[in-house]
Length: 382
Image (cartoon, rainbow, N blue to C red; front, side, top):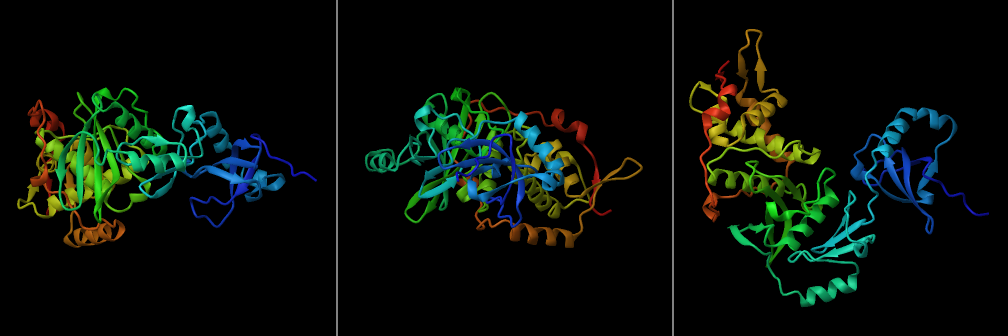
């Protein structure tokens, strides 16, 4: 007897593989492949990057009491269906010897809409088959990215690539970012962006680990930032943010990333801001400090400083409208231990002496105009 295939109107239970869950969770069927058969599942209260294709024997139809038990979650899934982004056709990206499970849909040309695509890490051209990829690696003459090398130390190097000059390279790196960033708008019009691409040294070779882009006429330190999934959790995200603020420093500017931040962007920037601010406060010699003092030494905007301090519970508001920063020495020590333990950063930091970058049109931003509304005297001893 032929097995009954489920439809896009059905709801099922399944183990969320990417979440490494041990309990079956309710999910909605977004798309069906009849040949295998397979179902593309959208889980309820879990980030959409954990959606994926599941075989028929991996799912169980929700019915009866179970359907009522998960009614609230099912309503959330229904809402997701109404705002559904396209189901990704590209499921795996093979690059630099890694096979990366993609998270989101990217509008690749039809010839690349395959479950598996390959990418050369230097020219960033895509191939639809392993055979094409192997032949390309033998013939590709580009052994470093295009653009200008603006930073190199013993561990990493950074290239500045102009989207107006290297359009194909920059469009392709935008395609890669779209596979892993939900709110990433594909930068087809790459002319107005600079792309800062980071490569890390592994033995005698360099591997692409991530990049950030920056819109040319805008003062944000970056528009988009991505660390490839195979290198996440190893400190490269912080190095990319470091590089963005280094460029900001050379421009005599304070800056902030383009808002709103994605969930991964928030998780990257907030610890970075907090660590830098606490590092500054712990060595500040005076009994009082202003937001302007912090901004001038960190290059963070007043809004980012206040958000970081409030989120960590360091900035407190008294009934008398006074604002204080409550920073105990033992808290600083405990904070650093926790940060080092939770983030395996391999203890590498960028050094501005290796930065070879000068802006074409440097400008001096008016400190007072940007910071005066947030100029608060804060007593570190209270």
